[in-house]
Every structure is written in C-alpha cells, then in structure tokens.
Length: 220
Image (cartoon, rainbow, N blue to C red; front, side):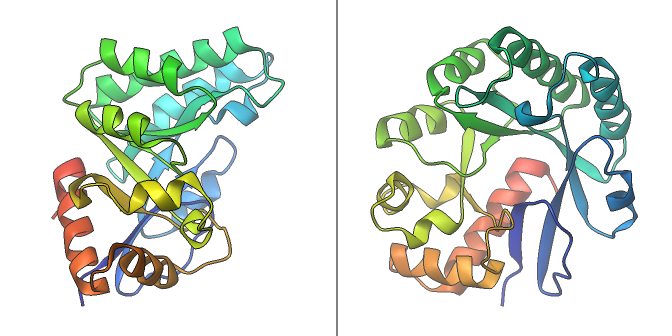
C-alpha cells in the first residue's frame, strides 16, 4: 500500500503508513517535539494588532527549520472581524517568507479567491501554493491549477451538496492533496471516500498523491 499523506492537521497522531504535515502556530512550540513534517504560519484568525509582529518573527525563525517544509497556514478571510488591511499585511509578509525560504505556502481562503489570485499572478509561480480545504467553483479551481497551485480536500467530500464534492470529481489528480484538518475523519477514511468519488482504487489515488508530494516538496 502506498503511503497516505495528510497534508494538513492541527493535532499530532501516529501515521504508521504515511506522512503527516502538522500545522504549528505561534505559541505551539511543544508540537515541534513530534517526529513528522511541519508547516508554520500565522492564521488570519489569530492576528492581533499588539502581537502580529512578534508572531511573524516567530514564524520566520521556525520556518528556517528543515523539518518545516511549508509556510502557513496563512491567508485572507472576509468572514472574520480582523481588519482587512492587517490581514493583508500579515499575508504579504508570509508570502515573502515562503519565497525567501523556497518553501510552499499553505493557504486559508474564505471569500477571498479573487484577491489571492491577484497575488498569485504577481508572485514567483515556480513556488507551489496549496489551498487547504478548497471549496469553490470549477472556474476558480482551474485558474489556480493553471497557476501551479494544489487543491486540498477533506471532510467536505462526504457532503454531496458541497462545491468541493462536485469539483473534486473532475480535477486532474496531479494537482490534489487530501487532509484530515481534525474534522472527525481518519486519513484512511478520507482516502477511501476520495477514491470512491473518483471511481478509482485507494491504492491508485495514494500513489498519485505521493507523486504530487514529491513534486511539490522535493521529498521522496
């Protein structure tokens, strides 16, 4: 059986037949004691006027660790009360960090695809971005794929009314990842559901996503 890759989780768990990419936010240094790969970033939900500068410094310091293979999750969110200019400033800073460290960016995006697409058009597009918990239209999905982005899916695949469910069925498998995001499903369950939706075997899907991981991160 090919390795099962969980591209985004917030709580550590033993992944005996796979790879876990554990997200770490400022103040969660104890997570770094685990034996896995990490992403490190300042989430828009956690931005505060009095702490964002020190938190960004923390992200910069942690991102230098070779075990940290991605910056984020970071992004833009129009559904929260954090002032938009502050969200933008923090996102732009982490964009620069990702490019400086040559590490992919994990994106949180809520009602902000047009804005983030504009940043993508101006960025170094050789550096992959991963849109975690993607749940938007086929048009947005295809535009992101054209711009060297990956789309990650999880529990929304169990909701047949979701945009994610319908988009996932038609996407090229070379641009997808799967994630648990601590949503109550195991990574095995997510893979089995994703394979069912695609009409392929779990083994075939796992092999393809392992190839995606190698292409995205350069890790074999």
